[in-house]
Length: 183
Image (cartoon, rainbow, N blue to C red):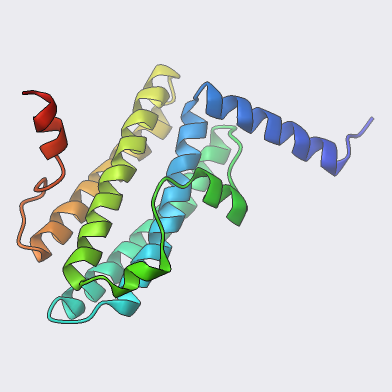
């Protein structure tokens, strides 16, 4: 007996819902996939709207980041399939699993504020990557963990480069909240 397309999709949705409540490395990695997708959109927003002295250098960096994130997005989707995981494939799923804030109004922020927003996005992205790395290691998925560790390194590099454009060190403005908790 063959199951209908609707039944297969309903089973996939039930499994996805379960995996996001457990959570699993695959479910957490789908958040990362969504964040990559939205980051590409946000990079374009800044690239197309940034003005002033930072514009040329930021546009150049964003060209590189867009290409890098597109490659990582595709490779991560393939890796999830290799791992036997369900992969987000719709705009709605990327919207649902994205953890970054979007707004059309942000294109009117100052160049510095637009770049700072991208820095904070990459830092937020790292929270999900770190969680997915731990889950992948606990689930004994070394290929997934290795990919995610590499992605973490890419994000750290993006943070450092964008912070340098702003005249900051890599972690300036990102760790203060953690430092306040230690008092």
